[in-house]
Structures are given as structure tokens and as C-alpha cells.
Length: 504
Image 1: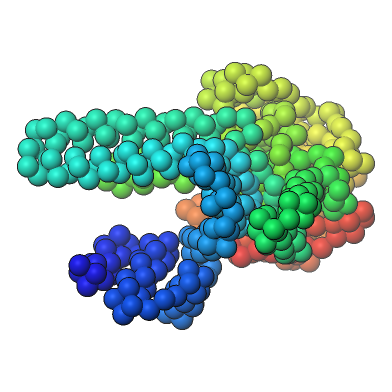
Image 2 (image 1 turned 30 degrees about the vertical axis):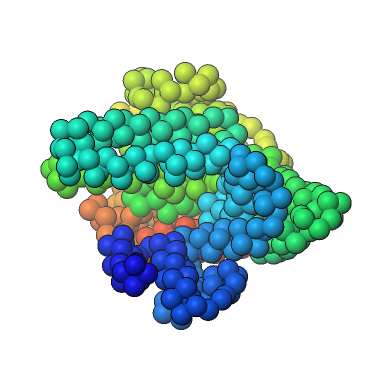
């Protein structure tokens, strides 16, 4: 029998896709049966250690796999703390302790990769683990056997089980939407990760030895988590980031000491009709796949302002997903564009959530964290909605910034005539560097030191246009572009800062 299992396990491992967690469990099971077969003895710690080293020897890059990290961290924590949960005779108490131990072991890894933790998982595991392992999994195997012998009865049982699985999934989804179900902590710096791991090891080693010492380690861990949660409140650094959202715009502004978190535009995709077979199972969305993970990684719990420069899909196409899945304090739109926004899905969602909506026009301004923000446009209703973009002027980190949305040449001319003394150190190039923006006259007056272009790689519009790049280079302006440089980040402290690029 053991020989048959040893032959079957590698086959099962390959058929199941050979994910790191499956490979780990199969190798440990094979090692266990080999030990029984040859009548040898080995500790659980030695078994998992041998499996760990064997996997890394065969596939060294597996160490970067999240499933590999979680699988070994959780398994090692259970082995290391087996004496703890064995002290509790009641199965429910044991299950709760094991669930807590696993959650704690996964904590640093989850924070590093996903920037948030669900403490609700401890309680859901107590409910779902016995439900699946004791009831649903055995019933699934029984239903399969019955289906082979009596297909009509088996089909009925499988349908009932399928309904139960769907119901369980819906209940889990509903639980994930509860307040505080997931708490974003931000991505911990290396020193914080090291301290969290040390405090976890200290807690495991003292749990069943000294209650007082375990309380101390638990207290240290809570203090570290509270510090990580509030890290942005204590940070004297500010940041301006031009997000790499493809052919679209999205700019994140983080003011020091959490005095303001602003997002200017959400990016988005312009969709075209495609055949059913060509549709992806999971549709890419800039809010869910880029913006929200970025906000969580920086420990941002709320956007104070979501500023939508104008109603184009590549600027506000992900607004619905953003406000549906992240807390937004205020939504700002440009004057004379209210009618264009009125019937959009995100507006009705914002009303349902009772979010504040503000209309900005030329002359509006505010100050946050010592940084001034002035609205230079729109000033009247425009036929061309690009020229009706919200144009912001601000001063951050010792530099003046002109953020122009999709403003074209006509809008630039009007801006120059109204503000003849307007200059800026940093120019966000209008309309992704199209031929109709950033004219020679405009650049000559603004005199920027650097220009930022948010543009998609190999886009169908040919942005940025060669003439625009030529004008910028002729004026000695440093050019940053997201299709070549990835996200562009300016991090500053008081009145000085540095630019850096990320991988596109």
C-alpha cells in the first residue's frame, strides 16, 4: 500500500499543477512513508527542513513564491508550537489556537506582499476548516462514488454540494466586506520586518514556558503593529508619484505627516468591442490592480481628495472601482462639466455612500500641510473637454508644479494670456504629449526644468509626438515618461527632494 502511495503522490503533484504548497505537502508525505517503509525515525522539524532544502536545491527561485513562503512558515509554526495547542483538550479551543498560530506566522509575509491583514481569518478558519475537512470533502468523495454507480442520485448530490459550496463562498465574500475585515498597515521597512519576526519567535518560544514573558512578546508585537499602522502620521517626507497606468493619467500626492493624500485622475481603459472567446476571465482595472495596492503599500487608509480633471475614460475610467473599494473623503470635478458626469455610475455610487462632491473653477484654492494649491482652469464652458481640464498649480518640496490634465494648445494660449508671469519648475505635459499640446510658446514662458509624460508603451495614438519631444529637448528640459521609466517618484523633505524611476 505504501509503495502504491509513493508512486501515486508524484503523479498527483504533477496533475494538480505542482504549486509550492502541494509540492511541499507531497514531498513531506513521501518522506514520511519512506521512513515507515525503512523503519527509521525522523523529527517533524527535520522532515520540513529537508523538504525545504530539497525544493530550493531543485528550484532556487521558488523562495520568491508567496505560496512557498506561506506554506513553509505556517507548517513550521505548527510544528514549533505543537506543545502549545496540545495543552488544550477541547477540539474547538485547539482549532482556535492553531488558527491563531497560523495567522501570526503568516503575518509578516502577508504584510510584505499584500500590505494588509485580516484578523477575521482566525474566526473564519474555526468555522470553515471543520466544515470543509469533516463534512464537505468526505461528502464530495462519497458523491463521486455514488455518481459512478447511480448517476441520477449522484448528480443530485453533486448539485446540492455545489449549492453549498457557492453559499459558503458568498458568506466568505460577505464577511470580507465587513468593516475592519482587512486592515491596511502598509509595506513594512526591513527593520520592522525583522522586529516582527523576532517578536513572533519570542512569543512561540515562551508561550508554554512563561506566561509573563509571552505577554511581554505579545505586547511588543502589538506596539510594532500600531507603529506600522501609524507610520505615515509620523513621516516628515512627502511624495509626488506619476503612476504608470498605461495610456492614461494618475498622479498621487502624499503630504508630510499625513496632512493630505490626493489622487489626480484614476487612469482607465478605453474599451473596444471584442469577441466572447477573446474576453479575459479577470478584466484588468487600474484601480484594483495598480492604484489600490499602491495606496495600501504606503499605509494610506483614506484619500482626502480624488480630483478628476475631465470626463475621459483614460482619466476617470476606474473611479467607480476606486470609490467602491477604498475610502475617499471628497470627489472633485471641474466646473461646467457637471452634466457630463451626472449619469456616470461612480457618481450614483458616491451619492449612495454620501461622499462630498465639489466643483472647482479658476480662482479656487486651498492650503494643506503648508502647501498651496491653486486652480488655474477651467474658467468657462468649452466645446473641447480637454481644454476644460482642471489645471492645478502647487508648490511641493521646494519645486513649483503645473499639472495640466489633457489641456491642448488652445487652452495653453488662454492660460498664457491670463497668467503672463506663470512659471513652473515641473510641468506635467498635457494630453500625454500629443501634437496639440506643449507648444513652443508655452514651454518658453513656463520654463520648466523637467517634464512628466504619462503615456502607454506603443500606444495607437503615437504619443508622445516627436515634435513635442523635440521642443522639450530644444529647451533643455529633462523628460520623464512612464512608458520608458515606469512610475516617476519625487520624494522630498521640507524644501528639497530627489526624483527616481521604477521599472516600467
